[in-house]
Length: 359
Image 1 (cartoon, rainbow, N blue to C red):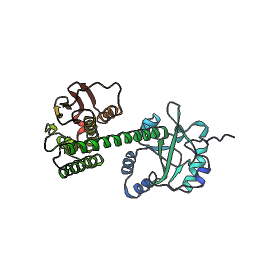
Image 2 (spheres, rainbow, N blue to C red; image 1 turned 120 degrees about the vertical axis):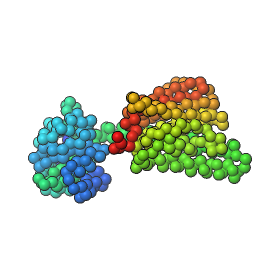
Image 3 (tube, one colour; image 1 turned 30 degrees about the horizontal axis):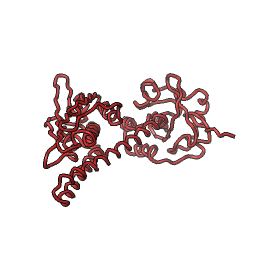
Image 4 (tube, rainbow, N blue to C red; image 1 turned 135 degrees about the horizontal axis):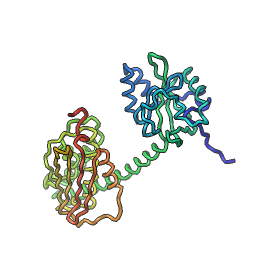
C-alpha cells in the first residue's frame, strides 16, 4: 500500500506532546530570554527580533501577543489578534484538539518542537491553509504560565533556502572568476615571479577583507566613500589605479553596509569578467550626489576603456541580485549597457542609509 504522510494542524494530536522533544536554537533562545529580560515589554521586543512569526497564548487559549511578522504570514494585524481565541489560526477540523494539547503542555512545560514527523496546518484570515513548523516554549508571567509559539511557513522557508543555495552557487562562481582574473592580471604585469607572487598575495588578502566586510553586523557610522573603497580595493591596482571614487560625506548604518557592499562586489565581478576590469586599460568612475530637498542619494558607477558592451539577451541572476539589494534599501536601480561601458545608477532615500537612531 502507498503510505501517506500524516496531517494535522497547529493543534497537534495527543502523541505530539506525550514524548517531549528537547530542541536547540529555536526554543532554547526563548529560555535564555526568559531568564535575562526583566520586563514583558523587553521580552516582547526580543520576540520581534525573531525571524519567525511569534504569538503568546494564555491558559484560556487566547492570544495576548502577536509579533509584527504575523500579519505577513496570516493576514491579521497583530492588534487584531489580541484577545482572540487561538482557534482563528487553526483549521476548524482540528480546533477540538487544542484544549487537550494545551493542558498537556501546561503539565509539562518544556521547550519542544510541535508535530515532529507530521504535517502541521494553519489557517490564514482569507480562509486558505498552509503548512507550518512550530516550536513551543513556556514563559512565566505575573499572571501565570503562558505558551510562546514560534511559527514558520514551510513553503516560504523552502523558497528562501533554495534562493540561498542559488546565490551561494552564484557567489562561488564569481569568487573563482575573480581569483582567476586577479591572478592572471597580477602575473601578466609582473616583472618577476616574486613581484607577481606578492601582487597576487596582497590582492587576495584584500579580497578576503572585502568578504569580512560582508559579514560584519556591527559596523555603524561608516562613511560611504570608505565602504566603496573597501569593496573595490581587491579589484584595484595600487600601481595604476582603476577606480576614481568621489568622496561624499554620507554616514552609512550597518544595515545598509551589506547591500551596498554586495552590489559593488557584484559590479566589480562583472567588470572583471566582461567589462572595464577585463583588460589593462579600463577604468571605473564612482560618483554620488545628495539631493537635500528630496532627501535621496544617487550613486553612479560608470565604466570606460573596456571592451565594447552589448545588451544581454536575458536577465541574469546577477542583475536580479542587484535589484533585490536595491529593494532592501527601499531604492531602485537603472542599469544601462552603453557601448563605451556599463552604467549603474542607484537611487535610494537617505533614511535607508543612515545608522539607527540618527536624526
